[in-house]
Amino acid sequence: MTLLVISPDYASHLLPLATLGTAWGAAGERVVVATGPSTDGIVRRFGFEREHFQLGRGSNPGVIRAEDQPRGEDDALRGFFAATRLGAIPTLAFQAAARGADLLWEPLTVAREVHRVVERVRPDHVIVDHLAFSARLGLAAAGVPHADVVLGHPTALTVGDEVYGHPPAWPRRIQPDQESLDNLRRQCEGVRDAFTHEWNAVLAALDPAAPASDDAFAERGDTLLLNYPGELHAPERTALLGRHAFLGSAVRTEERDAEVDAWLAGSAAPVVYVSLGSFLSVRSDVLARVAEALRGLDVRVALASGSTPRESLGPVPPSWLVRPELPQVTLLARSALAVSHGGNNSVTEALTAGVPLLLLPMSTDQFAGSAALEAAGLGEALDPNAADTGELRDAASRLLSLGPESAARLARLSSELTGTPGAQRARAALLEASHASAGGSPPAGTDG
Image 1 (spheres, rainbow, N blue to C red):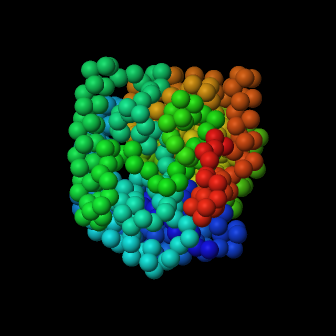
Image 2: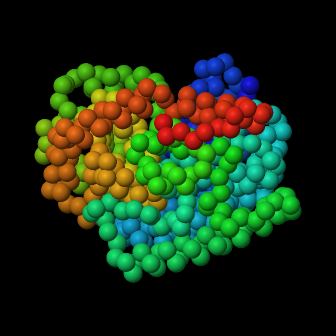
């Protein structure tokens, strides 16, 4: 049996997708990853084959820098980074304006190339990043059964009257005014309509008999997999998903790091892990404020600085561990608190480790994801542009002393997520779907 994994050339996308593939690898089966060259090293570390497949202009092997991107993508990144300094609505508006070029890149070329990849690999199962719209177009038009993996917060797939790019929920301390929200919604509706028009034009070119879509952002694969704990998803929204499986999380096994092992063994003081991800680590002002806040607490800090220079953080205590990249899963397993931008990988990996989160959301689904964590009592969110050192320190102190009810809920969720890993859930869902298509019982939705 062969699994084909289709991923953008970005580490933050490939790592969870490749982790899902380990369930096939553990069963002695072939795993082929179709992605670009920048993440070739990640594919090889997993022990998988790679098929060359380009899904966009940009790439990110771990830490992204605008100057490393091709012409055009560099300016887009700088524009995005600048927008995050202006606040949530300007950032979401900037992302909405760029959506077509970002998510439906050279759709006809990519869709036809995915046909060729499938012909070469001849997979039994296919899993594809939900945001790889051009590839999903090709698979759908060719009638190739595939699992559509929502790697972000589940709101990355719109349901009901939701509009892609317009968060359906906000954390308590980030509340845009109604006029700004209305303007954003109108912009996102216009983007949705233009995006759907282009989707339908390419679909008609590939398969003239295919029915047109009403909303391309609501399109989904034959099997829907959500890299998120179903326990934290609102039941009324779950009811709108159709047949699905919540994977919980996709936590990878990391190679041992001697420096990190020695650092962890060096003290019993509580560990706070800090990372703003591969993109948003460029926000050195936010990381510097977080560092200043944590210097006032009796903790040790492991901080992934990404593209922020170490000297921009202010005085770094000798007990801290600061590197551009750190083994996140390893450190979360020993942490008492995680400080994050609210990216779904960071959130689900922290929850699996039973670690509460201090979130500083800046873009896309990070706002809805932060709101869900607050509602569950498993984290707090602050405005990254407005929260001062005192607010950051106070929030960190509260989360380091999580109340008994929230602590018990977090422990139960961690036990559930580690008991049945996401890779096993993904493989079970695809095997069930294959059985159903062969004439067995249809696959059922699961909230696991």
